[in-house]
Amino acid sequence: MSEPNIAFVANLMADPSRAAMCQALAGGEARPAGELAARAGVSAQTASNHLAKLVAGRILRVEQQGRWRYYRLAGAEVGHVVEALAVVAPPLPSPAEANGHDGAARRLKDARTCYSHLAGRLGVALADALVGERWLEDDGRGYRVTAKGARSLRALGIEVNGRRGQAPARRCLDWTERRPHVAGPVGTALAELVLARGWVRRLRGTRALLVTPSGRTQLQRVFNLRYLEEAP
Image (tube, rainbow, N blue to C red):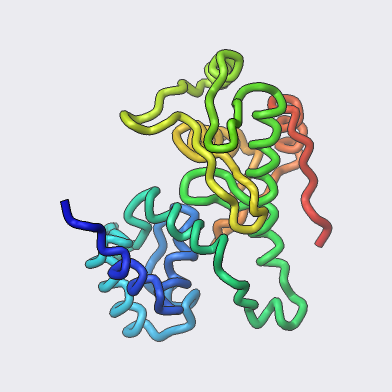
């Protein structure tokens, strides 16, 4: 079996415009080319060329919806790569941050999606709560769902079944908190749960999330999660 061509993937991600597009898609959503062009600060034609390379390199996949084409990361593995690179990458201040208007960056740090699961301060606080309540055990390398955790998750409608060869709950190092949040099937199911119940809502045009007032109460009641957003 030949060695994986890591340099090929690294070369695709090395371009700042392509990296910006991948970061914009790291929440797992599909976005149109025009929005990705705006995120990267390039023309529509330049964006089209970059997107074609990312699709050909199996970093992104494209979906046709009527007349429109939408792009998303090719899979959770790509999302994990983007998040892992963000952990070791130096900060790249945006013009807004340079002028002191860093509300968007603060919202991403506070709560966001990381492909299909919760990240930021919210995601890390949830991981801490699940370990503290003994729903999960953390051995420093990964999470294990306890018997109590399986019962509690089942009561919420979440069955603890990982895909073959995949643990139900995994650690994913958070690039802003530098601590793990919960990924894997359990992490995905928990994100779907809090969104479906309206405890957390998406902020349009970004992967940032907002905890609702009722969500704050329910997160504390269900998970014993004490979470406060940073003041703006």
